[in-house]
Image (cartoon, rainbow, N blue to C red; front, top):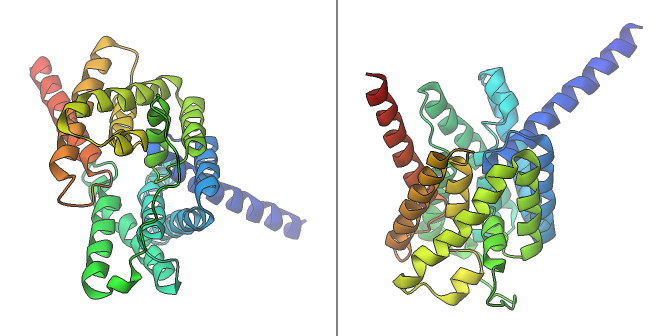
Length: 295
């Protein structure tokens, strides 16, 4: 009887761990939903087996690190320590060659993303994907300086784009570095399952970003690949809601993300920094207005 209870407890622990892992993956697009996280992994796998393995490895390492460091159990359950690590894993398999040292860097990046995320969580600072951005910048630019042979060759895109609204779905895909429209569609469905309002706002944000960016000599290839839209997808999801004022915040954040993206496009690897910069700025404005209305 004791052995049976022990086995049952062991299975429960594993199920709980995988729930943390999938929620951590879902939080890439701010969704605390294990089904959403699972579908994100499916979408990544369609694009790249190496990338999905890196995402799984990174989010598992991050979750285990948070448990080992005895971080808040509620935050672990919400997946707040997993999503930055997952993005680090996928990004490193995009920018670096898939050899042993790269997988080692995925593990190191996952651990440090957890530590950085905890630093901000403890201070009640919402910084979204900033730990992912910082860790990935440090690793990529260090590799470019010290070990440039590890940088992956950039293949020419083999995808033939049509001048349609496929870029909006690809914008969803590019949030997790996936260019094909099937992955983007799966990501959209995954968010829709968790929050239909957020999913539709994300689609609207992707479209709005293109119209905002067109006057600034953005190439048609980048538009159709979703590279102009993905930060705006995240902004729109972050501020989605059912009130008119939510739409205003979404529009403002999308405009700011587009501006940040245009400023950075020739200077640094953007990743999701435009989303982080725009969203943190909008949050500060919202908090300030709330304080003024309360006074």
